[in-house]
Image (tube, rainbow, N blue to C red; front, top):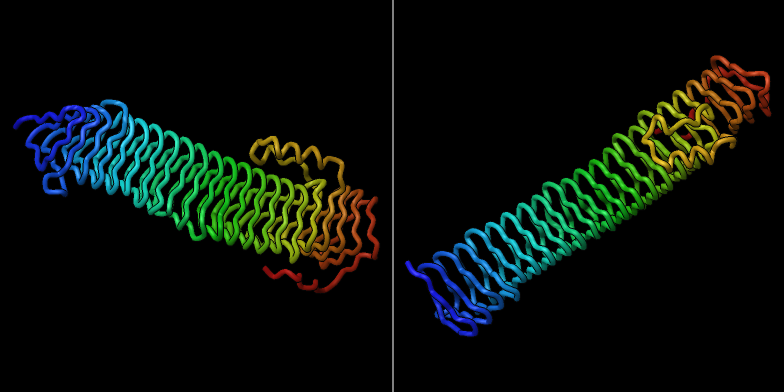
Length: 416
């Protein structure tokens, strides 16, 4: 077994090298059969060089500045280590790929890909881990375990089974299945994506419906379709063009607008909230400005001091204007404290309330109350009170119409 030396600037025709291959700068290699060159051991390039056809070796190293161009497929059985840039017209296959600058290829298949600059893949990108300093563009499908990019990422869809972390922007042009997506800029997803967790520290845009177990946004989220999730937390703005199904919890701190229905277990609002209809199996904890067209239903509702609710309210236990302390029970975010401060001293206002037990706190106003048991505290106001069980009222309470004790309450318009 011997080594073969190609001097700088030379053009060599090769087929099979039984040993190592050393190639000088600006050299050119042509396959003798017009198709492929194979090297039994290592191939070492000193800098700029080109291969006219397929190239296969055990390991490949480019030590100097410049670009290695392979006008065909590049197959490396072990490690590919390039100081500057690499171009392959077709597929790159290797165990590990380390490139200091830019990688351009038709497709890439490897265990680990690391590049200090840019990765541009025209077709598929398959790897366990991808770590790129500046930008990744993969127009075709990806099949990755983990992805980390320091800047912009554009992919054509596919699968990411573990963590995808981008410090800049991220977009997928077709359906993506993922485990955890972290984006510190803008994330753009098409309709039909499915994942376990999204953490967006900027803006999340979904061009259609999405299914994701947990969504956390600090900034803004725009979902132009239905959203299926277990838990969603938005500290900023949330817009949903369809309906939102949150099997566990929706926490909205800022401004939320849902064109359709919110279904779920629990809801916490700190700020502005609007939906056509809200149907919950457990609790609603509301602080700010809440509006529903067809109403809000939950087992237990807390409408905190200074909150304004438009739309009917239906629940077993409803407390209106009883508490303004929310920060101690929720996450300690400055936004929540600001909302709490702004609502101090404001009257709590609700429309019609249907419940088993309804309490109207001081400085609170309701349009009509229909409940089994009703408690009215000092300074509360109601236009009409209808009850079947017990009415407790303080001395300084105003009810426009005389309270009515009924045998049966009317059914609420919102069935749930």
